[in-house]
Length: 421
Image 1 (cartoon, rainbow, N blue to C red):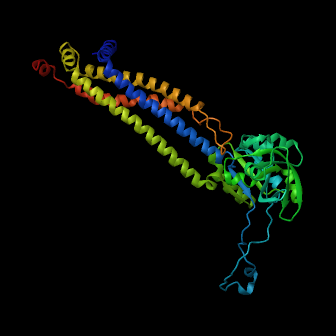
Image 2 (image 1 turned 120 degrees about the vertical axis):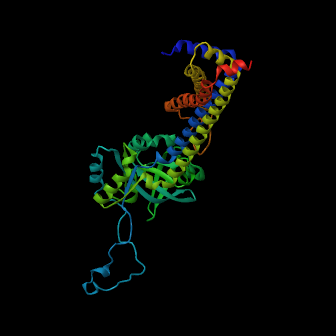
Protein backbone atom coordinates (compact mmCIF):
# COMPACT_ATOMS: atom_id res chain seq x y z
CA UNK A 1 0.00 0.00 0.00
CA UNK A 2 1.40 3.37 -1.04
CA UNK A 3 2.18 5.89 1.67
CA UNK A 4 0.15 9.10 1.50
CA UNK A 5 2.87 11.61 2.41
CA UNK A 6 0.50 14.55 2.09
CA UNK A 7 -1.72 13.17 4.86
CA UNK A 8 1.23 12.14 7.03
CA UNK A 9 2.81 15.61 6.77
CA UNK A 10 -0.54 17.25 7.55
CA UNK A 11 -0.99 15.15 10.71
CA UNK A 12 2.64 15.80 11.76
CA UNK A 13 2.06 19.53 11.30
CA UNK A 14 -1.17 19.39 13.34
CA UNK A 15 0.58 17.57 16.19
CA UNK A 16 3.38 20.13 16.26
CA UNK A 17 1.04 23.14 16.20
CA UNK A 18 -1.26 21.70 18.85
CA UNK A 19 1.66 21.71 21.32
CA UNK A 20 3.31 24.88 20.10
CA UNK A 21 5.19 25.51 23.36
CA UNK A 22 6.84 22.10 23.37
CA UNK A 23 7.53 22.40 19.64
CA UNK A 24 9.13 25.81 20.18
CA UNK A 25 11.29 24.50 23.02
CA UNK A 26 12.44 21.59 20.86
CA UNK A 27 13.21 23.87 17.89
CA UNK A 28 15.01 26.36 20.15
CA UNK A 29 17.13 23.53 21.54
CA UNK A 30 18.32 22.83 17.99
CA UNK A 31 18.62 26.56 17.25
CA UNK A 32 20.88 27.32 20.19
CA UNK A 33 22.88 24.12 19.65
CA UNK A 34 23.57 24.95 15.98
CA UNK A 35 23.99 28.67 16.73
CA UNK A 36 26.55 27.93 19.44
CA UNK A 37 28.33 25.48 17.12
CA UNK A 38 28.57 28.01 14.27
CA UNK A 39 29.72 30.81 16.59
CA UNK A 40 32.32 28.70 18.36
CA UNK A 41 33.77 26.95 15.32
CA UNK A 42 33.92 30.14 13.20
CA UNK A 43 35.59 32.14 15.96
CA UNK A 44 38.01 29.45 17.12
CA UNK A 45 39.12 28.43 13.62
CA UNK A 46 39.46 32.13 12.73
CA UNK A 47 41.67 32.61 15.78
CA UNK A 48 43.72 29.52 14.91
CA UNK A 49 44.07 30.75 11.32
CA UNK A 50 45.34 34.11 12.57
CA UNK A 51 47.87 32.45 14.89
CA UNK A 52 48.99 30.13 12.09
CA UNK A 53 49.38 33.12 9.80
CA UNK A 54 51.73 34.86 12.23
CA UNK A 55 54.20 32.00 11.86
CA UNK A 56 53.40 30.17 8.63
CA UNK A 57 52.84 33.19 6.36
CA UNK A 58 56.34 34.40 7.15
CA UNK A 59 57.92 30.95 6.91
CA UNK A 60 59.01 29.53 3.54
CA UNK A 61 57.72 26.10 2.63
CA UNK A 62 61.36 25.10 2.02
CA UNK A 63 64.36 26.95 3.44
CA UNK A 64 67.67 26.24 1.67
CA UNK A 65 71.01 27.26 3.15
CA UNK A 66 74.62 26.16 3.52
CA UNK A 67 75.01 24.56 6.92
CA UNK A 68 78.30 24.75 8.79
CA UNK A 69 79.03 21.28 10.17
CA UNK A 70 82.02 19.04 10.97
CA UNK A 71 83.62 17.19 8.07
CA UNK A 72 82.30 13.66 7.67
CA UNK A 73 85.84 12.46 6.91
CA UNK A 74 88.68 13.66 9.12
CA UNK A 75 92.22 14.13 7.70
CA UNK A 76 93.49 11.11 9.63
CA UNK A 77 91.29 8.88 7.43
CA UNK A 78 93.46 9.72 4.39
CA UNK A 79 96.54 7.98 5.84
CA UNK A 80 96.74 4.56 4.21
CA UNK A 81 99.02 3.23 6.93
CA UNK A 82 96.23 3.71 9.48
CA UNK A 83 93.48 2.35 7.23
CA UNK A 84 92.85 -0.82 9.27
CA UNK A 85 93.36 0.76 12.69
CA UNK A 86 90.80 2.05 15.20
CA UNK A 87 90.90 5.86 15.20
CA UNK A 88 89.58 8.24 17.88
CA UNK A 89 89.41 11.99 17.12
CA UNK A 90 88.88 14.55 19.90
CA UNK A 91 87.70 18.19 19.67
CA UNK A 92 86.37 18.05 16.10
CA UNK A 93 86.00 21.52 14.58
CA UNK A 94 83.67 22.56 11.76
CA UNK A 95 85.29 22.59 8.33
CA UNK A 96 86.27 25.90 6.74
CA UNK A 97 83.18 26.94 4.81
CA UNK A 98 81.27 30.09 3.91
CA UNK A 99 77.70 31.01 4.69
CA UNK A 100 77.08 31.83 1.04
CA UNK A 101 75.37 29.41 -1.31
CA UNK A 102 77.61 28.64 -4.28
CA UNK A 103 75.82 29.04 -7.62
CA UNK A 104 72.75 30.42 -5.83
CA UNK A 105 71.39 32.24 -8.90
CA UNK A 106 71.46 29.17 -11.22
CA UNK A 107 69.94 27.05 -8.42
CA UNK A 108 67.05 29.53 -8.01
CA UNK A 109 66.49 29.64 -11.78
CA UNK A 110 66.34 25.83 -11.84
CA UNK A 111 63.92 25.64 -8.88
CA UNK A 112 61.62 28.29 -10.39
CA UNK A 113 61.16 26.12 -13.48
CA UNK A 114 59.52 23.40 -11.37
CA UNK A 115 55.73 23.45 -11.85
CA UNK A 116 55.20 22.71 -8.15
CA UNK A 117 57.01 25.91 -7.17
CA UNK A 118 55.21 29.25 -6.85
CA UNK A 119 58.46 31.11 -6.32
CA UNK A 120 62.05 30.80 -5.09
CA UNK A 121 63.66 34.02 -3.89
CA UNK A 122 67.05 34.94 -2.40
CA UNK A 123 67.83 36.27 1.04
CA UNK A 124 70.95 37.37 2.90
CA UNK A 125 71.29 37.03 6.67
CA UNK A 126 73.91 39.10 8.48
CA UNK A 127 74.71 39.95 12.09
CA UNK A 128 75.13 43.68 12.70
CA UNK A 129 75.02 46.41 15.35
CA UNK A 130 72.48 49.25 15.24
CA UNK A 131 73.98 52.61 16.23
CA UNK A 132 72.03 55.79 17.06
CA UNK A 133 73.86 58.41 19.07
CA UNK A 134 75.41 56.68 22.05
CA UNK A 135 73.05 53.68 21.84
CA UNK A 136 74.34 50.46 20.30
CA UNK A 137 72.20 47.32 19.93
CA UNK A 138 73.02 43.91 18.46
CA UNK A 139 70.73 42.38 15.89
CA UNK A 140 70.49 41.04 12.39
CA UNK A 141 69.82 42.57 9.00
CA UNK A 142 68.16 40.60 6.24
CA UNK A 143 68.63 41.38 2.59
CA UNK A 144 65.42 40.72 0.65
CA UNK A 145 63.60 41.45 -2.59
CA UNK A 146 60.64 43.44 -1.14
CA UNK A 147 58.22 43.02 -4.05
CA UNK A 148 58.79 39.26 -4.27
CA UNK A 149 58.53 38.92 -0.48
CA UNK A 150 55.16 40.69 -0.66
CA UNK A 151 53.96 38.43 -3.48
CA UNK A 152 54.91 35.17 -1.79
CA UNK A 153 54.93 35.82 1.96
CA UNK A 154 52.51 38.76 2.58
CA UNK A 155 55.47 40.91 3.58
CA UNK A 156 53.44 44.12 3.17
CA UNK A 157 51.03 43.10 5.95
CA UNK A 158 53.76 43.47 8.55
CA UNK A 159 54.92 46.95 7.52
CA UNK A 160 53.04 49.16 10.02
CA UNK A 161 54.56 52.46 8.88
CA UNK A 162 55.92 53.35 5.47
CA UNK A 163 55.80 50.84 2.64
CA UNK A 164 57.68 47.83 1.32
CA UNK A 165 57.63 49.58 -2.05
CA UNK A 166 59.63 52.46 -0.55
CA UNK A 167 62.29 49.94 0.48
CA UNK A 168 62.44 48.81 -3.14
CA UNK A 169 62.70 52.36 -4.49
CA UNK A 170 64.97 54.10 -1.95
CA UNK A 171 68.69 53.40 -2.14
CA UNK A 172 70.26 52.61 1.26
CA UNK A 173 66.84 52.29 2.90
CA UNK A 174 65.92 50.07 5.84
CA UNK A 175 62.71 48.63 7.29
CA UNK A 176 63.47 48.85 10.98
CA UNK A 177 62.05 46.40 13.53
CA UNK A 178 59.45 48.08 15.74
CA UNK A 179 61.24 47.02 18.94
CA UNK A 180 64.50 48.59 17.77
CA UNK A 181 62.71 51.80 16.72
CA UNK A 182 61.06 52.04 20.13
CA UNK A 183 64.27 51.44 22.10
CA UNK A 184 66.22 53.99 20.04
CA UNK A 185 63.35 56.53 19.76
CA UNK A 186 63.53 56.47 15.96
CA UNK A 187 60.78 57.23 13.48
CA UNK A 188 60.08 57.21 9.76
CA UNK A 189 62.59 59.31 7.82
CA UNK A 190 65.30 59.20 10.52
CA UNK A 191 68.84 57.98 9.87
CA UNK A 192 70.40 55.00 11.61
CA UNK A 193 73.88 53.58 11.35
CA UNK A 194 74.64 49.88 11.10
CA UNK A 195 78.02 48.36 11.86
CA UNK A 196 79.23 45.01 10.56
CA UNK A 197 81.17 42.59 12.74
CA UNK A 198 84.31 43.84 10.90
CA UNK A 199 83.65 47.35 12.21
CA UNK A 200 82.51 49.00 8.95
CA UNK A 201 79.75 51.58 9.56
CA UNK A 202 77.03 52.51 7.05
CA UNK A 203 74.23 55.10 7.35
CA UNK A 204 70.73 53.99 6.31
CA UNK A 205 67.44 55.86 5.99
CA UNK A 206 64.38 54.45 7.77
CA UNK A 207 61.70 54.03 5.07
CA UNK A 208 59.37 51.84 7.14
CA UNK A 209 58.70 50.14 10.48
CA UNK A 210 58.31 46.36 10.48
CA UNK A 211 56.31 44.48 13.11
CA UNK A 212 55.85 40.72 12.93
CA UNK A 213 53.89 40.41 16.18
CA UNK A 214 56.71 38.40 17.77
CA UNK A 215 58.57 40.66 20.23
CA UNK A 216 61.78 38.60 20.19
CA UNK A 217 61.96 39.10 16.40
CA UNK A 218 60.99 42.79 16.30
CA UNK A 219 63.63 43.63 18.90
CA UNK A 220 66.54 42.56 16.68
CA UNK A 221 65.47 42.15 13.05
CA UNK A 222 65.34 44.65 10.18
CA UNK A 223 65.25 44.46 6.39
CA UNK A 224 67.10 46.08 3.49
CA UNK A 225 67.37 45.23 -0.19
CA UNK A 226 69.72 42.48 -1.38
CA UNK A 227 72.00 45.03 -3.06
CA UNK A 228 72.17 47.23 0.05
CA UNK A 229 73.19 44.33 2.29
CA UNK A 230 75.73 43.09 -0.26
CA UNK A 231 77.23 46.59 -0.30
CA UNK A 232 77.31 46.76 3.53
CA UNK A 233 79.05 43.37 3.76
CA UNK A 234 81.43 44.19 0.88
CA UNK A 235 80.29 41.14 -1.06
CA UNK A 236 79.72 40.51 -4.76
CA UNK A 237 76.32 40.54 -6.50
CA UNK A 238 76.09 36.76 -6.39
CA UNK A 239 76.46 36.61 -2.58
CA UNK A 240 73.33 34.82 -1.26
CA UNK A 241 73.08 32.99 2.07
CA UNK A 242 69.53 31.60 1.85
CA UNK A 243 66.90 30.60 -0.69
CA UNK A 244 63.25 30.61 0.37
CA UNK A 245 60.81 28.51 -1.63
CA UNK A 246 57.01 28.83 -1.73
CA UNK A 247 55.02 25.91 -3.18
CA UNK A 248 51.51 25.68 -4.55
CA UNK A 249 50.86 22.67 -2.32
CA UNK A 250 52.44 22.68 1.14
CA UNK A 251 52.14 18.87 1.29
CA UNK A 252 54.93 18.60 -1.32
CA UNK A 253 57.38 20.42 0.97
CA UNK A 254 58.91 17.41 2.74
CA UNK A 255 59.59 15.31 -0.38
CA UNK A 256 60.91 18.30 -2.34
CA UNK A 257 63.22 19.29 0.54
CA UNK A 258 64.74 15.80 0.45
CA UNK A 259 65.17 16.05 -3.34
CA UNK A 260 66.90 19.43 -3.08
CA UNK A 261 69.28 18.27 -0.34
CA UNK A 262 70.41 15.34 -2.48
CA UNK A 263 70.56 17.36 -5.69
CA UNK A 264 72.32 20.52 -4.52
CA UNK A 265 74.29 19.27 -1.50
CA UNK A 266 72.73 21.98 0.68
CA UNK A 267 70.58 21.90 3.81
CA UNK A 268 66.87 22.08 2.93
CA UNK A 269 64.31 22.26 5.74
CA UNK A 270 60.58 21.93 5.05
CA UNK A 271 58.02 24.02 6.91
CA UNK A 272 56.50 21.15 8.91
CA UNK A 273 59.89 20.03 10.22
CA UNK A 274 60.82 23.61 11.12
CA UNK A 275 57.51 24.21 12.92
CA UNK A 276 56.74 20.73 14.31
CA UNK A 277 55.82 21.98 17.80
CA UNK A 278 53.64 24.74 16.39
CA UNK A 279 51.82 22.25 14.14
CA UNK A 280 51.12 20.06 17.17
CA UNK A 281 49.65 23.02 19.07
CA UNK A 282 47.42 23.90 16.13
CA UNK A 283 46.15 20.31 15.86
CA UNK A 284 45.31 20.22 19.58
CA UNK A 285 43.45 23.57 19.40
CA UNK A 286 41.44 22.37 16.41
CA UNK A 287 40.66 19.06 18.15
CA UNK A 288 39.35 20.90 21.22
CA UNK A 289 37.28 23.25 19.06
CA UNK A 290 35.56 20.44 17.14
CA UNK A 291 35.11 18.27 20.26
CA UNK A 292 33.28 21.06 22.11
CA UNK A 293 31.23 21.91 19.01
CA UNK A 294 30.10 18.31 18.51
CA UNK A 295 29.27 18.03 22.21
CA UNK A 296 26.93 21.03 21.85
CA UNK A 297 25.12 19.34 18.97
CA UNK A 298 24.82 16.02 20.81
CA UNK A 299 23.34 17.77 23.86
CA UNK A 300 20.78 19.43 21.58
CA UNK A 301 19.98 16.01 20.09
CA UNK A 302 19.26 14.53 23.52
CA UNK A 303 16.93 17.45 24.21
CA UNK A 304 15.00 16.65 21.06
CA UNK A 305 14.81 12.99 22.05
CA UNK A 306 13.30 13.82 25.45
CA UNK A 307 10.72 16.17 23.99
CA UNK A 308 9.66 13.74 21.25
CA UNK A 309 9.44 10.99 23.84
CA UNK A 310 6.99 13.15 25.82
CA UNK A 311 5.06 13.78 22.60
CA UNK A 312 4.37 10.07 22.31
CA UNK A 313 3.03 9.73 25.84
CA UNK A 314 0.77 12.74 25.35
CA UNK A 315 -0.42 11.52 21.95
CA UNK A 316 -1.35 7.98 23.03
CA UNK A 317 -5.03 8.57 22.31
CA UNK A 318 -4.28 10.11 18.92
CA UNK A 319 -2.06 7.17 18.01
CA UNK A 320 -4.77 4.70 19.03
CA UNK A 321 -7.37 6.56 16.95
CA UNK A 322 -5.02 6.72 13.95
CA UNK A 323 -4.40 2.97 14.10
CA UNK A 324 -8.09 2.24 14.68
CA UNK A 325 -9.00 4.25 11.56
CA UNK A 326 -6.63 2.29 9.33
CA UNK A 327 -3.19 3.83 9.76
CA UNK A 328 -0.46 1.21 10.00
CA UNK A 329 2.35 1.17 12.55
CA UNK A 330 4.74 2.31 9.83
CA UNK A 331 2.49 5.29 9.02
CA UNK A 332 2.54 6.33 12.70
CA UNK A 333 6.33 5.95 12.74
CA UNK A 334 6.62 8.18 9.67
CA UNK A 335 4.43 10.82 11.32
CA UNK A 336 6.76 11.11 14.31
CA UNK A 337 9.86 10.96 12.11
CA UNK A 338 8.46 13.85 10.06
CA UNK A 339 7.87 15.81 13.27
CA UNK A 340 11.50 15.30 14.27
CA UNK A 341 12.86 16.33 10.85
CA UNK A 342 10.61 19.43 10.72
CA UNK A 343 11.91 20.47 14.14
CA UNK A 344 15.48 19.79 12.98
CA UNK A 345 15.05 21.75 9.74
CA UNK A 346 13.36 24.79 11.29
CA UNK A 347 15.64 24.82 14.34
CA UNK A 348 18.72 24.24 12.19
CA UNK A 349 17.94 27.11 9.78
CA UNK A 350 17.24 29.45 12.70
CA UNK A 351 20.51 28.26 14.28
CA UNK A 352 22.44 29.15 11.13
CA UNK A 353 20.93 32.64 11.20
CA UNK A 354 21.75 33.06 14.90
CA UNK A 355 25.29 31.79 14.35
CA UNK A 356 25.83 34.07 11.36
CA UNK A 357 24.49 37.05 13.29
CA UNK A 358 26.74 36.42 16.29
CA UNK A 359 29.86 35.80 14.20
CA UNK A 360 29.15 38.93 12.13
CA UNK A 361 28.90 40.89 15.39
CA UNK A 362 32.18 39.41 16.67
CA UNK A 363 33.81 40.28 13.34
CA UNK A 364 33.05 43.97 13.91
CA UNK A 365 34.35 44.13 17.50
CA UNK A 366 37.66 46.03 17.71
CA UNK A 367 40.74 43.98 18.54
CA UNK A 368 43.56 46.36 19.34
CA UNK A 369 46.94 45.16 20.56
CA UNK A 370 50.46 46.40 19.98
CA UNK A 371 51.62 42.85 19.27
CA UNK A 372 49.26 42.54 16.26
CA UNK A 373 48.91 45.99 14.70
CA UNK A 374 47.55 44.69 11.39
CA UNK A 375 44.60 42.97 13.11
CA UNK A 376 41.76 45.47 13.61
CA UNK A 377 38.85 43.20 14.61
CA UNK A 378 38.45 39.76 16.17
CA UNK A 379 39.26 37.05 13.61
CA UNK A 380 36.31 35.02 12.28
CA UNK A 381 36.40 32.26 9.67
CA UNK A 382 33.22 32.37 7.53
CA UNK A 383 33.74 28.98 5.93
CA UNK A 384 30.52 27.83 4.14
CA UNK A 385 31.32 24.23 5.07
CA UNK A 386 30.63 25.02 8.73
CA UNK A 387 27.06 25.96 7.79
CA UNK A 388 26.64 22.83 5.66
CA UNK A 389 27.93 20.70 8.56
CA UNK A 390 25.65 22.56 10.99
CA UNK A 391 22.38 22.01 9.10
CA UNK A 392 23.38 18.42 8.22
CA UNK A 393 24.11 17.61 11.85
CA UNK A 394 20.80 19.20 12.90
CA UNK A 395 18.86 16.94 10.53
CA UNK A 396 20.87 13.81 11.35
CA UNK A 397 20.70 14.33 15.13
CA UNK A 398 16.95 15.01 15.09
CA UNK A 399 16.44 12.03 12.79
CA UNK A 400 18.04 9.66 15.29
CA UNK A 401 16.45 11.51 18.22
CA UNK A 402 13.03 10.88 16.64
CA UNK A 403 13.74 7.35 15.46
CA UNK A 404 13.55 5.55 18.83
CA UNK A 405 10.34 7.28 20.02
CA UNK A 406 8.75 6.68 16.60
CA UNK A 407 9.52 2.96 16.85
CA UNK A 408 7.79 2.97 20.21
CA UNK A 409 4.76 4.68 18.68
CA UNK A 410 4.73 2.10 15.88
CA UNK A 411 4.34 -0.78 18.36
CA UNK A 412 1.54 0.74 20.44
CA UNK A 413 -1.56 -1.52 20.60
CA UNK A 414 -4.65 0.71 20.05
CA UNK A 415 -6.99 -1.83 21.77
CA UNK A 416 -5.08 -1.54 25.08
CA UNK A 417 -5.12 2.27 24.90
CA UNK A 418 -8.87 2.47 24.18
CA UNK A 419 -9.72 -0.11 26.91
CA UNK A 420 -7.75 1.96 29.40
CA UNK A 421 -9.88 5.04 28.78
